[in-house]
Every structure is written in C-alpha cells, then in structure tokens.
Image 1 (spheres, rainbow, N blue to C red):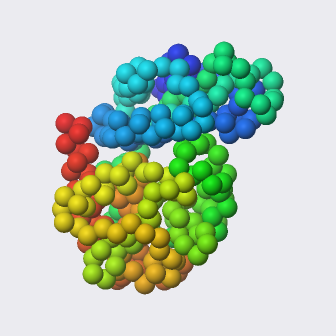
Image 2: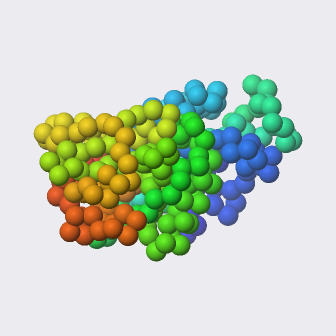
Amino acid sequence: MQRIVYVDGHFVEEQAAKVSIFDRGFLFADAVYEVTAVVNSKLAEFDGHMTRLQRSCRELSLTLPVSLDELKAIHYALIEKNNLNEGAIYLQLSRGNAGDRDFHFPSADVKPTLVLFTQARAVLDNPQAKTGLKVVTCPDIRWHRRDIKTVSLLAASLAKEFAHAQHADDAFLVENGFITEGSSCNCYIVLHDNTVVTRPLSNDILHGITRQSLLKLAAQHNIQLEERPFTPEEARHAREIFISSATTFVMPVVSLDGKTIGDGTPGPIARRLREIYIDMVKEQVK
C-alpha cells in the first residue's frame, strides 16, 4: 500500500502528491516545519509542537491556513490512513506559490502550502539508546535565528555528512568556542557531581519541545540542572553526554571527537531521564 500524504486540503497517495516549482519553500526555503512523535497511534507532545509552530509562523509573518483543531484532525487522519503505530508526522508550511520567482514576499492573497506525511520508525525501543552515539564537533555555520524551525537545513545536512565521514553518528556544532546544539538536537552534559548542564534558550538554539519537558522532569525528580554554555573540552571530560529531540527522546553519547565518555556506555542520568520521559509520553498516549 502506498503511503497517504496530505497536500493543501487533500489526502493523496504519495506518488500523486505535487507542489509547484514556484513554491517559496522550494525556491527560498521560505517555510517552517514540525515533527511530532507517534506512540501507540497517538501524538506525543502535540500541544508543545503546535505552540512552537505558531511562534515560528509569527516570526516569519506566515499564516496557518487551518485551525489547530483542524491540524490535529489531519494528523490523526494520517495516522489512521497509514495504520501508523509508532514513528512521526512531518508538517511543513511554506509561504506558497506566488506564480514566479521573486525575493519579495507575495501579496496576502497567496495561499500558503501545507504538507504533512508519516514516517514509521522505532522511537520507544531505539537500539541506539542501549549502545549510545558517537559524536564529533564541527563549526556552526548556520544563520542566527536558529530559534525559528525553518526548512533551511543545508548546514545541518553538511554537519551530518561530516560526522558520517568521521565514522560518527552525529555532530555537535561549535560557535565562539562553545557548543550550541547538535545538527538536529539539543545537547547536555553531566558533571561529576551529577549536575546536568545545557545551553540556555536564545536565538542561538532551537527551543526544543523535548528539552522543555526534560527540564520540568529533572526538577520533579530532584536532578540538578544548570543552564549555561559549555565548551567541547568540558564536554569531553564530562561524566555523561546526551541529546534530546522529538523522535529520539533522550539519547546517550558515549564518544566525542574520538574520546570515550565515562566508561563508554550510556550513563545513569541519561538512562533515568529517558525512562521518565518515556513514562510521561506513555501516560499522554493512554
């Protein structure tokens, strides 16, 4: 069975889905996106993702063509039509097709383009959660509004390709001597007194929905947390490193730039945070 996707008000088979070559998402990366995890055929942290989507739209003067209730119904229709039990739904909203290529924003009567599709993948029992990730550092060459979740992801793709060339799983991005975030994740280190350190929110990093929940869960479970920048050198000598994102949840890092972190296995703080985060998600999707 072909995957069913959503394009501008229509559910169609993926091979029949079409977007104009003049769409500004294609020509200018003038678009935003969200990825929401699906567990037990239910949406995880949906409200948080939609709040961030609305913020991204405001920052770029984009207009959502449907209500949040309609968006939720579209998500669940895709889950049902594709018989998706576990994975993710990708949503992309562009400024639309202005009829030609022009740097200026089109008039207000140009309709935005809204696309959604499903991706089946393991999120609860991701095998890398048991082995941990190998990560390398590289320069952060992105623009300075990383808090807006745009589809301009070439720099992130280059970072991932750099990591793969170094036989690593992912890359941490470095700017002015400090780690900003991963190529598609927020980053954390654990000090030797078990304090979790993560970079504070600003325009320099994406305001992660999973990150937001993890900070609340850490406080609830008496896990000490400090929001401040940290260097690659501090990270390489940390007790633990881990990342978070919408579909990896919490993922331990066991190597950074070839240096083994801790004893080379997922650490107890990362394991605990993954466990309590998954417990929270399972409670949401009952």
